[in-house]
Amino acid sequence: MRETVAPPSAGQVSSGLLYGLRVAVTAHAAALLVAASFAGQSVESDSMIESHLMAGMVVHLLALVQIVLAVLVWRPGRGAGWPALASLALFLVGGAQHVTWMWLGAHVPNGVALFGLITAVLIWVWSPAAARRR
Image (cartoon, rainbow, N blue to C red; front, side):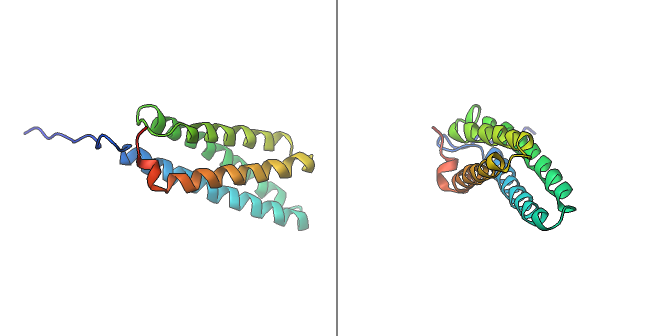
């Protein structure tokens, strides 16, 4: 007996792709919060600097996963394209964080930019608009 799987409705992005992107963006945002927490603690204790660095690497890895999923939602999924560009920007700014760790005048504003971008993507990905096709 052959079983057929119905494609998503014509007006919606695949729920599996969207769910994967939601998980990735939420994990990315949580990792950013942890990294920022470690940064604040490293001001008082030098032992937390290593934890901040490791959390930053996790953030960077999650940004890469997020790019892949955002592109899949955009291109084959026919979803919005701006989250893929925002995810790429998060990856690039995160890379800049690794380079500017010694210059707080650049490191802190980059961190603020990361929070602004991830907040925009996080709000969008959990909104009903994320499921609509272009």
